[in-house]
Every structure is written in C-alpha cells, then in structure tokens.
Length: 244
Image 1: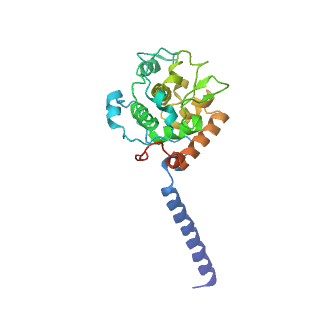
Image 2 (image 1 turned 60 degrees about the horizontal axis):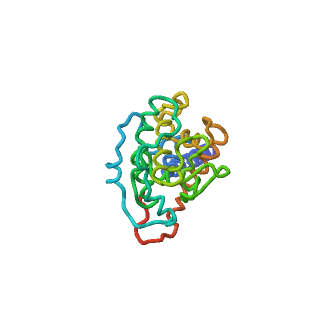
Image 3 (image 1 turned 135 degrees about the horizontal axis):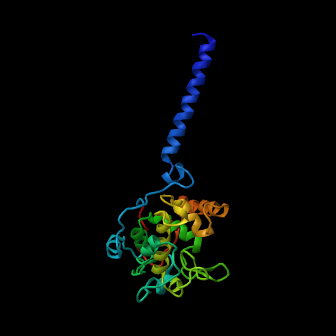
C-alpha cells in the first residue's frame, strides 16, 4: 500500500469513528434534547381523546413520598364546583377550560401525576416546570405577589383563578396544564402551538410566542428535566420516589 493510500485509509477510519461516536452519543440523549429545542416528548398528540379525572386518579402511582409536607392543606383542598376564570380566547379552548376541576387530593407528586395524565403530558416535564416555577411550593408568590402556586398562575391577568390558584394545588396544576393543552392542540396563537410542546411551555412564561425570554425559560425547564433534582429531595414520609 502506498503512503498516500495509507494516509487516506487512516483519514477515512478517523471520520468513521467520529460518526459512530456521534451516533452513540445522540442515541443516549433524551429525545427532547436530541431532536431540537422545541421538540415534543411523550405527550398525547393533538386530537387525541383525553382521559377524565377518574381514569387518571386510578393511574396515579400512590406513595407517601412527600418532599413538600407544607403543601398538605392545599393538596387536600379542591374547589366546591366550577371556577369561572378569564376566557382562554377561542371556543375550542373554552371547551377544554370546562374540563378543569381540580378534583383530586394527594401528595404533591400524586397531583402532578394526575394532572399530567388528564391533559396528556409527561409527568417529568411537569415536575421540571414546577421546579422552575415554585420549587414545588404551593405557597410561592411571584411577580410581586400576584402569581400563585406550583405553576404560578398570574391572578392579575387570569381573573377568576383566585383564590383556588393559591388554595388548591390540584386546581393550580389542572388549570395550567389545561391551558398548555389548548396551546398544544393549536387552539391558541393562531395555531402555531399545535404539537409544539416546548413552544407552549415557553409561552406560559412570556406570553409571547417563541420570544427570547420564552426560549430562555425553556432552557431552564430542560435543565431541571435533565437533572431531575426532585429525586434527591428528602421526604417527610417514607415511600418510593416517583418512577419514570
């Protein structure tokens, strides 16, 4: 073999090794990270039938694991009936709004599981967003004291959500994920949110479609999703940590 051919073979071998290494790395990355900044995770696709309160209550992985025992009262408070909040903006979105009940009690994580199931989203994504918004503390008040709860519903904009956005963890998460589903179905933002999970999560923070602040917020939520720091939180009781 000539020296030139030997050099070419070695160069091609090096390229092949780099390609193989890249394939291995990407295959080990979570799908939400490997497929782009606004990729969809394991959410129910737009147009899918959504399970109801009872179906999702039956699917919750029950455990005494509770890293936020101070949420107990809010975790066991539910609205006595329908809560009329500011319109979500379109007739199709309002149909989803009518599904919001907050009708579930349990630990903080059980509530996250229940609402995520009800609206067809990955519970870990909800867990990660709740870390960013409130560190899972339902008593959290943000935006100068006008945003409440696990997912920080802004009371000055979403009129009618108080007092249950503060008093009831289940209502707070149920309402917030319902609005996310309305975006994900394409019922808001001129349909741009259809099938775009991370776009809809970003607009939860900024109110503007894929703005710079929305993208920055998404990066923070993804960081929490990657680290899953809740798995290291101590619990006030025994019990298993939440599963995948």
